[in-house]
Image (tube, rainbow, N blue to C red; front, side, top):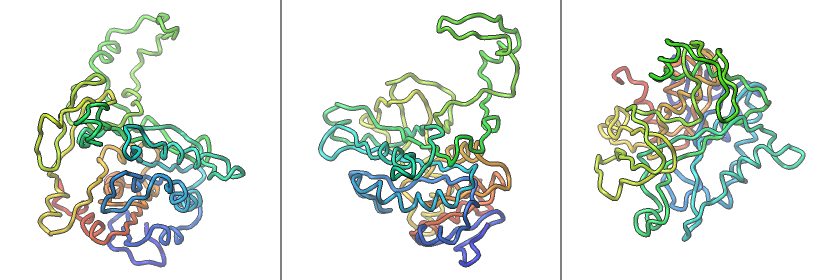
Length: 336
């Protein structure tokens, strides 16, 4: 997949990455041609980041400029999946509502000033490697738990977008494997749910929940249990052991191939990278091989890399020249 009027910064078998403002680049994408937009735009954070982020009170208006293009370029059956972290009100231990205001605006009907999207479902990305911030409320005064979850809005142009959860089934648990082996006696559960004998049929795996974990281990924890996350400098201190607000367990690599190559070449690595599990889950759920995936805020281009491995066509737009240069490392032959 390429833009006909522009030269890509680099291209691969299935896709192409472009340097530039995504508003200008999206203008060259034909109407109703994209199957999935999977992206993580700059968040409205209290602290400014080097990749640029907009204040919460300006965020909805800023994002609408992009969302109008998103709606235009998506196919009628296409999906828009946005990873967007929450924020705090400056100087107070209470949350901003900007990401809720955003999704309400995107899903309001066009006659009411919205974009006309549907909210297909909320997903949640748990990231234990997040630092315990704001430190004043989490590690100093101990009034809040560590904020380790990003909301992922799954939006669509119609109520039935292209999707199939059979492509993202999880392996059955040992308990479910025993049930399939020994059978299940139909009965009414205390909750009122009538579980029939169909519950014991082997359907190839378990339907996944709406929490994207990308775990490396298999140990499940309870709400409030402390989590040890690996940080970029591999340092773990007592202050980093914080209770979190999601049932989950995982960690993230702090020195992967992409980061090593950035260091070798003297290029800055993107500080807010997608975990592979997130675009992998979304791309499998919402597309098939040969479909077209767009990331208009590509960063380190994990979305393009995953699309490539899954044989989807892809487009990646990034405004920072160093970030797009270093994202090419994801496509080197030596990558594990």
